[in-house]
Length: 149
Image (cartoon, rainbow, N blue to C red; front, side, top):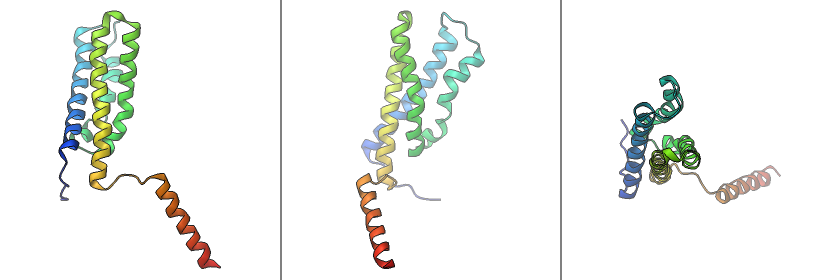
């Protein structure tokens, strides 16, 4: 079993923000659409498929603290961000529902993206800057061209 590197307090804060926001968003969407209901009658299967399932896809990796999963979960949470903005604008009777969804989605996005970045740097898995990669490639090809002549 590999030993994990210790996590900085700032990294732990963003991880906790991501986990709490993610779990809260799952619970909130279930409460909103299954218990509180809406003026539209959606089937339970539709609600589970459209509003709950996308949040369940990254759940395992987020709970386990995998930076890569946190990074791609940011794409999923944008769906909920857009949904909340749309409901805030188009359905005044559900504004507080959508405001809570927007708050949780924003918390999840910030927590996931910053945790992925900070933890990736701690583990040494961050990407190099483009200028560094280009410089390395230039040196490699210059060395290769000079040795072939």
